[in-house]
Amino acid sequence: MAHWLVKSEPDAFSWDQQVANKVEPWTGVRNHQAANFLKAMAKGDRAFFYHSNIGKEIVGIVEVAREAYPDPSDETGRWVCTDMRALGPVPQPVTLATIKATPELAEIGLIRQSRLSVMPISDAHWALLCQMGGVPAKLAK
Image (cartoon, rainbow, N blue to C red):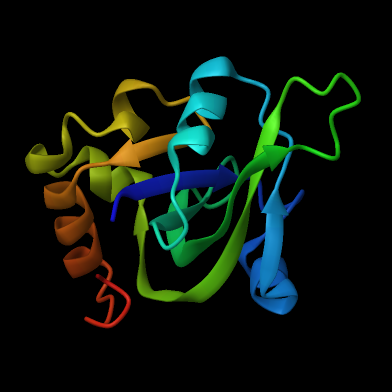
């Protein structure tokens, strides 16, 4: 299982909306590198749900429910999306400031490529961020 981080502006699509919808297509990715990461996701992979712009924090965990398929919001047919299933909240949201202040996370994509909306998270970084957020073991797989 691979781990990821997906970003959304909460005024456009929030964690609360993800939870209410249960499974939601992760559409609108228009960056080639981020789209390639969507294509690399496998059903069952887990991702942190990160609120960007407002809040700037990891707030939840989602699971890939459907692998990459054509993004219905893209009229050109060039882009893909995946379906994400809400699994649970991060009990103590992990802020960008906290991530930046943690030396072990200096190489995380969220810091190195801050504008990227989909990115891989190493197993070591996943474990540390889950610990920092008080994520229950059943969600931290």
